[in-house]
Image: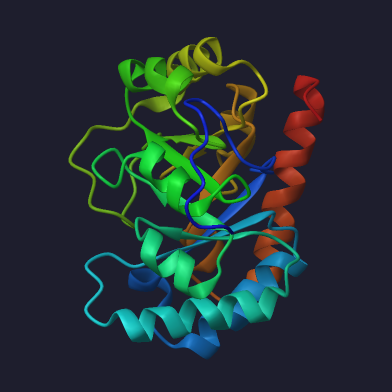
Length: 236
């Protein structure tokens, strides 16, 4: 990633594959860097296409940085590794990019810091937020929460399948179908196909992937369900 780039509004970075987006949440996975690295490697071996390191209210930035570096070393460039919220940690760890919420750093500022090759993702919760995508230099959007989840404290009610479809439609009106749109929150093997049928290009998962053992097998199962649903929708 290069510092100091100043791309135009709406300019995005490299293509992003959202089919199976694994979120390594320290609250769910624990803070052991070696274990996080092992889980990341298993997830990628099972078909995970994108990873995110997420730690809310980071008490020790140095420890977080070491965990991110361990994850990146474990996946060895096979998939991009993003950092939730913290552009500074992404830069320091030489991660591929960041995922931003609506109250985090503005995507324009993240793009200037990360440069044209950095990945910038954004959470969307409403249609009005989706309408703004036409002027934001993001590489993908994740809509949620779609379903209820215990992995994250979310004060907003779930949007459900219909709500997801409406927000995704407005996101694609704003930026075109080239922008990957994923779904997040409460997604597992029981509803992964349904959310893809509703228009998602992929699913972002935490507990369904990292909440128990056999991460590689869980990843393989989820990836197969997503790929089959995409093929049935004619989007593969």
